[in-house]
Length: 121
Image 1 (cartoon, one colour):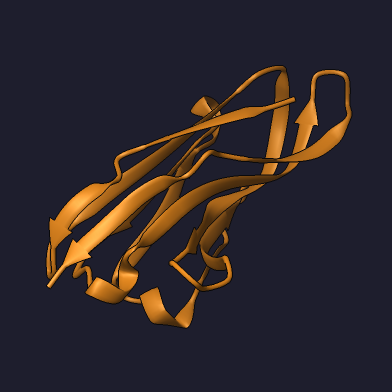
Image 2: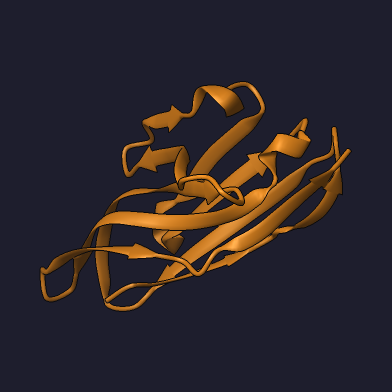
């Protein structure tokens, strides 16, 4: 099963930028979709952005024009560049991999442990 390890969270002032990274490891043959979700205190987890192996992207309306998702298929790594951050972007950000095909040809999903992003006003 794939393991996802996130990095890049932290504290930033409003208007600032952060870049999150998430690397998948394990007996991976391919990954269909990789992306980012977030969960703010007292709220449900929501999709932020995801990207397919072919490069198609989807963004939440709240982050369009500010966040950019990208991936390196050779490294099984997904990135989230976050610009013009707002206090309402404060949340735990989770990396996700959907349609992870193992070398044994099983298909699963995987989640990271989450990384905290705090945007101060």
